[in-house]
Every structure is written in C-alpha cells, then in structure tokens.
Image 1: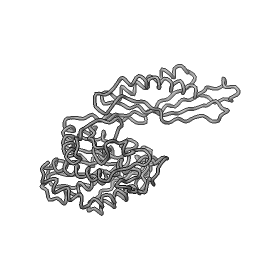
Image 2: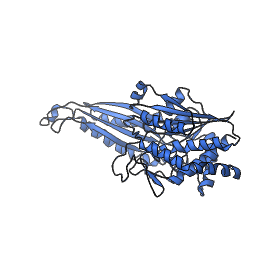
Image 3: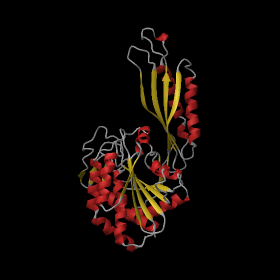
Image 4: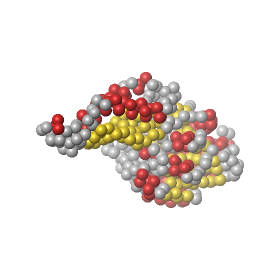
Length: 409
C-alpha cells in the first residue's frame, strides 16, 4: 500500500460514511428472516438503494420451483458490475437473509438503533453490513481516478442461512459470473481462509401406534429413536480427538437440533423424526463422514428390528480449504487490514460453514472478509442484540477499497 492510495481513498470513504450508515439502517429495517425466506422484498429495497448510489443493478429472480425446493418463498439475487478496463474480475458476495431474531432483545431487531456509535439490529453484522462495505468501497474507487484494470462485481444474495445453493450457487451454475477471485462477507477483523463443512441428515423412525394401556401391541418409534440418539451421542464423544491442523477450526461436532413425533400422551408413538448436524473439518472427506454417521445409525437401529428407519440427506456442504491463490488474496487483505486497524490482522479458520465454499467448488479462490469486531461473538451474531460498531464498518470499507486497488492495478 502506497501512502498516496490511502490518502486518496480514506477521505472519499469518510465523505460518504453517514450515507453508508444510513443505507445499512435501511437494509436492517426490512425483515428478511430465513426461514421463512420471503426475501424478494428486501432485494427490491436493496436494489433501490444501490441505484441511488449510482450503480446499475441486475435483478435475477430465481424460479419459484427452485426456490420452493430449497425451502424458501422468494429469492431475487442482485448483481452489480463495474468495469475499469481489461483485467481480473473480483466478486464480492454478501447475503441479505438472516436468522429470525429470537428472544431476549433490548433493542428493536428491525430498528437499526444507534447508541454510542454502535448500531443494533438483526443482520447488522451478518451480513447486511457488507452490502455496504463492498458497495462503498467500489463507490470510492469509482470516484478516485486511480488507474485500475479489471472488473468488480457485487453479488448480493439471499440464502446463506440455508446453504447458498440458490444464491451464489445459482449465480455460478447459471453462468452469470465467472470471477477470478471472490471475497465473501466476514464477521471479524481476521481474514478467514478455511471453514468446516456440514452434513445435515433427517432420520425418520416408523413404528406402530397402540393404546398406552397395552403398549406391547404396538411398535414404539420413540424407544427406537432413543436408542439411535444414544448411539449418536456416544459417537459424538469420539470426535474430540480429531482436531484440525488449521487454526480456528477445532474438532468435528455433532448436534441433534430438531425432533418431533408422537400422537398423544396415551398412544404409543408411531413416528419420530429428528435432524442432526455433523460438522466436517477440512481434513475429512464428506462422503466418508456421511457413511460413518449412517453406519452408527444403522447399527443402533438393528437393535429395534420391528421399527423402520429411513435416513435422508438434507444438506452436504463441503469444507473450505485454501489454495495458494486464496492465501495470496488473504495476504493482501491482511496487509491492508493491519495498517488500517492499527494492529496485526492475520488469517484463520472458523468452525462454522458459509456459502463461500461454493466459489471454491467452482474453482474460484475465495476468502471471507468484511465489517465486524475482533470476534463474531462480540457482534452477537445469530444472538439477541446483534450489533456493529460503525467505525469498524468504516475501517473495513477502507481495507476493501485498498485491496481492490491492489488487485486491479
């Protein structure tokens, strides 16, 4: 980073900081909870705001059948492209869908209230903030007059919370973009180069209903499900020894997060369904992990031969594993982030999974970086009173502008 670059870009970003904060507030005020995933209204508002900033916005509605198959109601992906000249294409992807607010808020989750320089609201950190990080970084470059070569694309999508297949996955599959590099929304100072994969399985246990006074005349689906769950929890205990060599990743995890079944208190339950989440570290092979989990279920189910057990894959998200080009991209961001933040900023892995993996699967080097505090926990991401310090938003925007300048020079 040369001194003239930051001296040019920093005042350009500062001059529109209030407008950036206001845009973020407007994005927070439009609900886009997923589920239920009725996100087209938010995309319409986001497009309107981006056009107000002078961008040409492409609206790409995803076909209803595809959206419904993904478990959502409506999705319109947005693409903004600005070409500076011949050169690489850099895609910047942030998602506008969010988890539901839940309980425990002391601020209106859709109010975008600012207290002592901190904005509160669902999605303010994960990741509506990076709609503006990327947009205002590009805006500053457009106004800078710096000699740049290449294209910047903003991919504003709406299904990260359920995997990304009708967001970045759909954009890439449709051939709407073929970037040379990608940066996906971040949530801390660190640059993320690796993350876990994730397997979701739905297990359905079928028995036979009977009167509770004569339970032996039925087949207790809950009893069989309890046996399977006991085996899965025992299996979970074996995972602690498989710690990833990548910092920040940790060991594989297993969680059973949903369960339903039964008819009434006085009836032997005829069906129980539950869903499990198995996190996959980068060193593991996803197909092998799935086979391993299915084997645990099958062995436990065999002890209840009268019950029928069906296992269905709901999601298989592969881990994000960095290559040399991704590490290079991370090093550029880390260098600028260290200078702007005034402290050492490095790269790391995280134990969650994101839709950034879909760029990697398409052969696009990708890392995660955007507005956020030191850790996602500080931002209350996916928790009550999600928040973002607005000065961190300003700094991340400058980091991205300087990074793009380097990549396009």
